[in-house]
Length: 168
Image 1 (cartoon, rainbow, N blue to C red):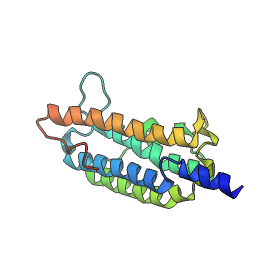
Image 2: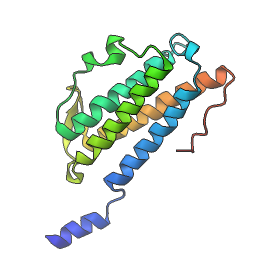
Image 3: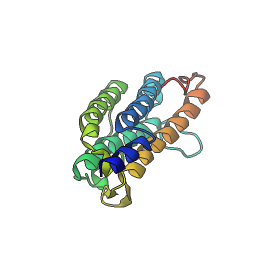
């Protein structure tokens, strides 16, 4: 039994600590995008039918906030109560950054509570999205990258150079 556990550990691609650092690296980069975004354009600037910047960022906050707690505890906030659905969004860049930082600390608190043997366990995220703990977590990260890419388009269209994407 011990040999099997050791073999499984040796075949592991990434530890949960490394995955947390990877996610937090993306979050640090997205935070710099929020810092770079002009406050007067956060709520109404749009290109090609994309949502305004604040809507994109609030979705990321909601998914990370309710998501990390749901993955760690099994208690999922219903999606219809999330700010990006209800429209209850921060009213300033300062408030947006504060909420971002609050969720970053929540991730640091809850993520280590996810046991490594649970990453292949099936979950129903927010009561409607089926997957494994790991696939759900990768969705959160992929979704952040996607919305950050949209924010890069916005920044460039406003004549602002976004942070380098590799500086995580």
